Amino acid sequence: MQSLLRFLQRYHFTLLFILFEALAITLLIQNNNYQNTSFVRFTRNIKGRFYDQTVKIEQYLNLREKNRKLREENIQLRNFIARNLDTEVDTFKRVIDTVYNQQYYYIRATVLNNSIFRQHNYITLDKGRAAGVRPEMGVISSEGIVGVVRGVSENFSSVISLLNSELNVSAKLKNSGYYGSFSWTGRDYRYGKLQDIPLHVDVSKGDTVITSGYSAIFPEGIRVGFVEDIQEKGGRFLELTVELSTDFKKLNNVYIVKNLLKEEQKELENEFTAQ
Image (tube, rainbow, N blue to C red):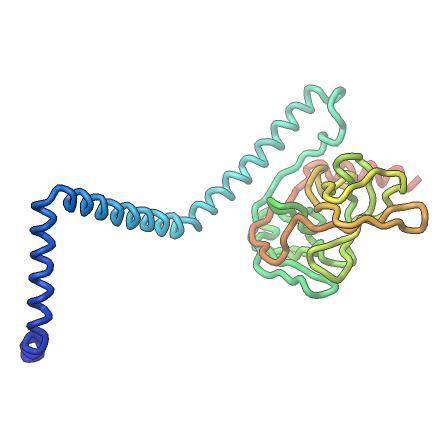
C-alpha cells in the first residue's frame, strides 16, 4: 500500500495530465462528427487487424492436426484410385495397357532418421512388419521417389535411400518414353544421373524424368526429377544430370508402396530366366 501511495505522490501530475488528455479527446470525439467517424474507422481497423492475426495464430496452431488429416485423406485417395484401376482393368484388361495390371497399396509412414551426406545413405521409418511392410517395397513421397525398403523389424523399417550409390532405378523421360538407369552421383544430394539414353533422343532442359514401371517395386509415372544438364557419353548415349524432385533435406512424410501382384510377376520372370 505504501508503495502505491509513493507512486501516486511521485507521478500524480503526469497521471492527471493523462486523465485530462483522455477526457479532452473523448469530448472531442463525442461532439464532432468528423473526429467521431475517424475514430470509429480507426478502431474498426485495429479490431480487424487483431482478428486477422488471431485467426492466423489459430490456423498455425492447428497445422499439425490439419496435416495429419490431409495425410490420412491422401493415403485413402491413393488406395481408392488403386482399387478402381484394378476394377477397371479386370473388365477391360484386353484394351488397357498391361502396366496397370499391377495392383498397388500404400502405407503411410513418418521419417525418424535420414542421412544425406554419406556415400550410402539410409532412412528409418516408423512402420514395420506389423503394418505389412516387407523388404524390397518402394518408398515415395508426395514429391517423388524416395528409396527401397532394405530391412524390417516389428515396428520399424530401414530404407536404402535414392541418395545411395548402390541403388539403381529404372527411369524414363516422360515426353519420349525412352528409359535408362538412374543412380545418385554420390556428391550433391540434389542431383543424380540418368544414363543409357540413345543419342538420337530429343531431350531438353526441364524435361520430366519418371519411373518406368519396368520393375515390381515402383509403379510407372512416379517423379524422379527434372533434366538439368545433357552430355554425350561414348558417342552412342546421352548422360543426363537430373535435379531430384524430392527434397531429402526436409523429408518427413512418405508412402510405402506394396505391389499385391509382385510375387506372381517375379515367379513368372524367374521361370523364363531359369531356362
